[in-house]
Image 1: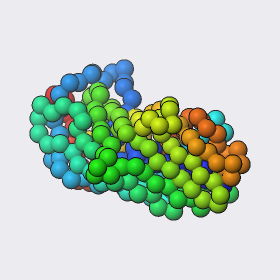
Image 2: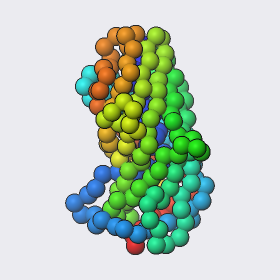
Image 3: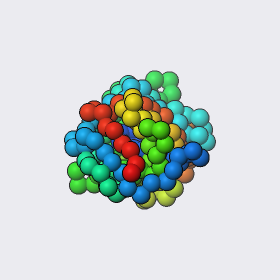
Image 4: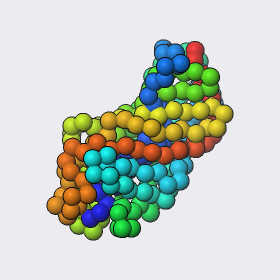
Length: 208
């Protein structure tokens, strides 16, 4: 029941996965992009977390793995990539309560990745289409955007030199919270995803 936070984790993968994020004052808005090598990609993150910022509840997973694809070449437009699978392993909430966290990303409903700005080897962007759920010990909940039926967005940055995608925000919210969650989360609570996802093979993204 104290695993309510897991619900946000989905986004974490989500996101985490191949997403990019918020804009920067020194970055320039770009309309076309160059990506190498592109093709099939995977992502791994250790100990991603999702925090309900209204209650302070945090869900932590030992590992998150993702898979998807990225475009290749120059003169590219968004979306630059798509996440088709997100898996969370060994997730726990308050007091170590075990949680099962699932994400909606699939080949039929991929999460598109849009790049927004670029500066000095760092791309800011957003991962869209995020929805997920969590369950355990009598507590269930879902994660989505500002409306329960609308997918959410995760923001972040991708750094060419490290091949790491860092999740830093977005508009995720927790919904459909069951009574078994005992106040650890409430319908409409905003959630923040934190996590560093290493992308393989490493991509180099520039603009133009």
